[in-house]
Amino acid sequence: MMTRVNNLWILPAMVLLAGQIAMAASWSYNAHAFPTYNGVSLVPLRAISEGLGAKVTYDALNEAITVLDGRHKIVLYLHSTIAYLDTTTEQMPAPAIMREGKTYVPLRFLAETLGAVVQYNDEAGQVTVTRK
Image (cartoon, rainbow, N blue to C red; front, side, top):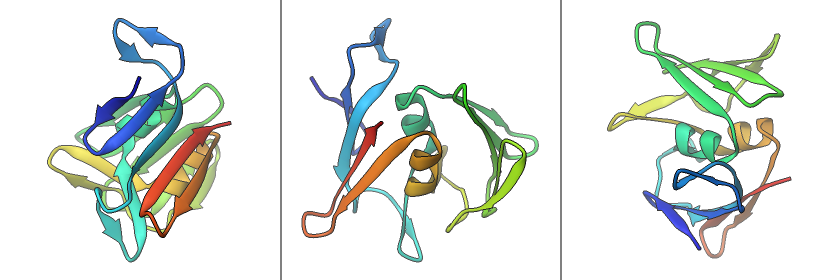
């Protein structure tokens, strides 16, 4: 069974809560379906984070997004390439942006920080994110 979130395909694990995906085993999507920034693929932060079992909160006043996954706390701000990972500062390859009410962030940074593996098939234009 596949669930579609925009143009992002989620292949769910067996854990479902009230019809919602609690954790995804693998994701696959068309690399051209989402925005890029200087060649960096950006993806919807909430869809990826929640699909990997993390919780997301948004502070509209400060334009701050917090992602908690039980192992890490990631805090980032719209229009900034700086991300705070636990007690360290990380440089993302592209800023977090907002489009049509959704926050987009660099795929590899987010997925790998949350313990997933990213594979890119340039020929097919396909990106797969798999939970370790």
